[in-house]
Image (cartoon, rainbow, N blue to C red):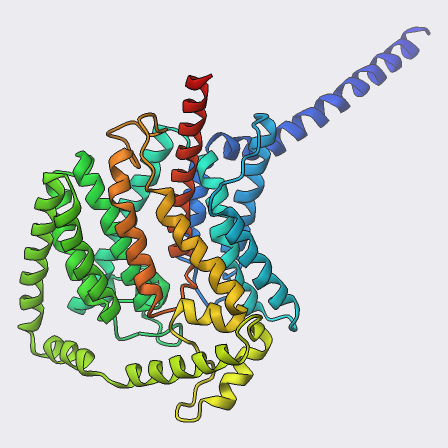
Length: 449
């Protein structure tokens, strides 16, 4: 008779023991993916950049890049807490970036909710600000830097391939397919890539081409792959049919010839000039392509529209030079002033003019301070940087950095830099260089003490 109570109590004990075990297993299983992300933050960072690159605009999946971005920020901050690392401020560009971020946010909150305005705010200010601060703690060793370099080369190869396919008329091979959708974006008649705007595609090709040049200098990029990119990149830039992109590409290659100390870089630049010349002659030999290129060179309506917008923007800036017009008043005021062109939305096609009109002299000075700090962050040379010679973003890469920033800023004179992938790429590299500078300063301070 006593066996029954004894068996019942044994079952209760077993049940009580299994509940904590089940809860522990549930918690461990639920957090295992998060642990995997924390163990490989560089891959999550690159996955986020990939989502930003291939974000299908104007579709119901447009929120995917925001989820990826928030996940990256959460995982990176959680990793800092778990590893008990001391949070660092990614000086020197942090303060002017924070100032402009607050100005843009205040202007945005003053108007009614508009999803597109918030998207532009994130792409233009929030994403580069966050990636600038996170990049130094994520890409902090040779392996993660190598992953970033591989990512850059793969993206360059893909963008070059789809641009050349577009130029040759082989549109059936272009992926993703939404690139060919004429109802999305602009410049459907040019090689616009996943950005759906030819300027953004051309700027990215130019920036990634400079990174590939540095990879060739270090011997990471060599052989057949180097030859293919040497031929493909000039053709891809040509296929964008964008004069600002052509000018920046034609300017940065001779600059490297004269200012680079690497013989490999100078030889590669001469090869780019030769490949670009042969490619241009080949493209112009086809009648249809020849006509389209000359029509693009002789096209005057975009220039006339830009001149009107520049004049209107200057007038608006002089009326409110200190505080600017803000986001809410900008479009209605432009619609009142611009009579010769009927547009659903007006753009200044100049990053600096838009900032001056929208945020006044304060915003323009903050942005110019960011520009100065971008040049300075890559101009410091230390004997003990985080990246050893021969690895990506080593000491000699800093000779490429001013050219890369100049390409970014030059194209900003002809278009508003609202492209989150382009901004994210530039400020990611800037953040890594800033982190290297901090480590070098700490190392020098330790030696002195």
